[in-house]
Image (cartoon, rainbow, N blue to C red; front, side, top):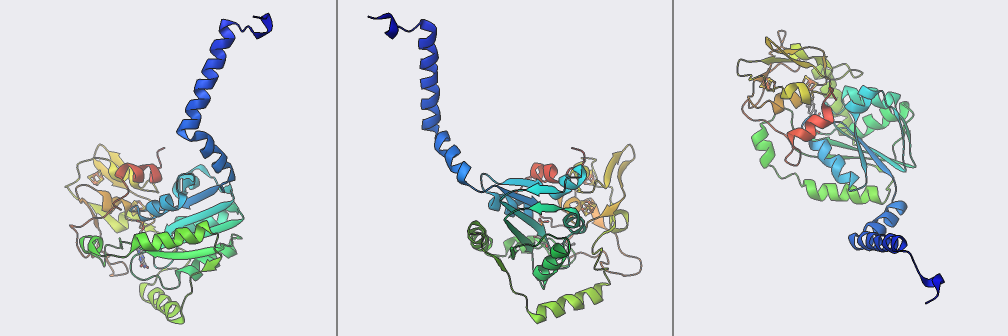
Amino acid sequence: MSTDNKISRRDALKRMSAAVISGAVASSGLLSLTSCEEKRNKRIILYFTGTGNCLYVARQLGGENGELLSIPQMVKRGKYDFEADEIGIVYPIYGHMPPNMVREFIKKARLKAGYKFAVLTYGARKCDAVEIWDRISQNAGNKFDYINTLIMVDNWLPNFDMNEQIKMDKHIPENLQKITTDINGQRRWHEPVTEEERQQHQGFMQRSGLDPEVVFLMKSDKCFTVTDACIDCGICTYVCPRSNYELTSRGVKMSGDCEFCFACIQNCPQKAIQFRKSEDGSFPDGTEKNPNARYRNEHVSLMDLKLANNQKL
Ligand SMILES: Cc1cc2nc3c(=O)[nH]c(=O)nc-3n(C[C@H](O)[C@H](O)[C@H](O)COP(=O)(O)O)c2cc1C
Ligand code: SF4
Ligand code: SF4
């Protein structure tokens, strides 16, 4: 045997371990996954959620490789610059408009992407939500190629009983599948709006007296009250995207501007958070359909919601 063909014991071990590792990588499919991933578009999804519907939708649209970013967390970190092949936004409509935090976010955001899409979730009546988002986002210099709506459980406690809403079949999987197909094919399309829907929104604005620039932003202590049923569990302090709750030696304290997202009232295990009745009867007046029924999206855990909204991170 010539010395050229001889390998040292150390080299032999090195070669053996390299062969074992490459075999393992190949059999786990990691190699093929890596090469597929390289070809796949980078997709970022920015979302806002109160009761989990939008987080669920964001996850479904993100698939295995999408990057999900919570808008309250981005706002907290002052992060407004994003770059990817595709950037999406998912939010719940409030009075057919975006939540205040989403509106303020998009005004400051610089979204660099070849394809931008928005999915707006709602529960009963979307009116001209698509056009409203188109206007707001274009004015902010962020034109969206695709804007669509998705009907889900309506978490608006004043008008809806959550137990009844949960039982209704709103064809969410089928509708979400259509949206996913559209987005994966980079469809450029805005869901059409009718004149009747525009009029309905105008009527709502007149009746509600809401300021269209501020919408549902209210003072939390004017909206809610905490009863003696509170057990100081602290959940409200974690799920609020504005950090309006604080646990003190004298119980829960609440203050600050409120998005009216209902993360607190819907997730309190004691149903100890209740609407405060408005003194002058102004909208919303503090009544609710079923104070014993509460909702969080079935695919979203309390921990998911805490991670999405927690301002203490
Ligand atoms: C303050 C507020 C206002 C709402 N306004 C509307 C509305 O105008 N039309 C509608 O169909 N649903 C409305 N909804 C229902 C939500 O848009 C819907 O349930 C959404 O999917 C909730 O998403 P989330 O679970 O991610 O918070 C409203 C909910 C809240 C809390
Ligand atoms: S979530 Fe409810 S029970 Fe828990 S601290 Fe807040 S108000 Fe009290
Ligand atoms: S106080 Fe409640 S409704 Fe208001 S922003 Fe916080 S979690 Fe949402």
